[in-house]
Length: 343
Ligand SMILES: [Mn+2]
Image 1 (cartoon, rainbow, N blue to C red):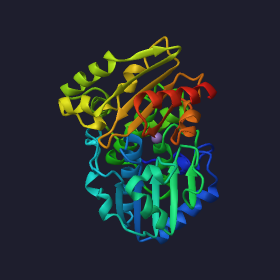
Image 2: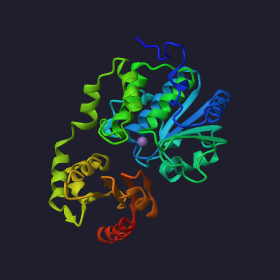
Image 3: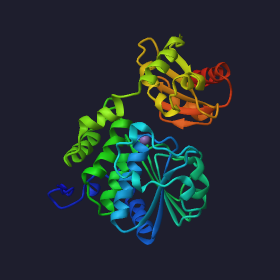
């Protein structure tokens, strides 16, 4: 059953007051014209995609494919693989590795990414595209994209993707709704973060009405991990430090190699560390397979970790942000403490 997404007046939700996600109608209309006139469209989301990036991209890919467009959807990781947590998402047969992405597409639509850097191997393809539509809820990066469908106040890129789907004349089916729901629950922390507005719950109601299994999605995203994760988590917690409102730890690639745990599996450690009552800011340094440190930061609100991470070459939001460091653990933390002191 496909519920009719139109309201009683026959208008899709996107045309209701406040549902345009703060984006001018002229921008939505220009996006529709660009999509209409393109035969082949490249879709790209940020590297090591989360539920919001991949879910938003796949939901729009379903819609464009139903419109008869040729679609290449990808993300620019050197080791191209869908993170285990997201393998339940429908539509993955539409994904192509970055090497098969069009070299200079006429139109690229990006999801949940505000810079070329975040697109990894696809940054060059995107830079060469004639038009780039940016669908995102991060503050717009300078010089990125030719058309922004960007609302920094939206809880998830999935909210913007949903509006785009309606405006393209698409309808929610269970597969599309599952992809969008994965984005919505990922970025609102299962509706726990302050970004969880009435509009978030209203969107969730539209998605759940398609018959998707919220319990199965929650288990896939939050409630499972390999045994090796517990061992690596134990190592990380064993060396956790609390210093003057800052709680932090790190995970080396040696930690992971000892138990054969891939990098993507340690994303959730920050969610354990940030529980600490005595800390305002939580930090986890994660050494990737190339030896760089991926720094995850979380704030309870008083400190703008987004500003601190932006100053160090990364980005994110006020309460959740990150960047890459090529220094060692102690030097990385020293630089970060300096920026947090200003934030
Ligand atoms: Mn997001």
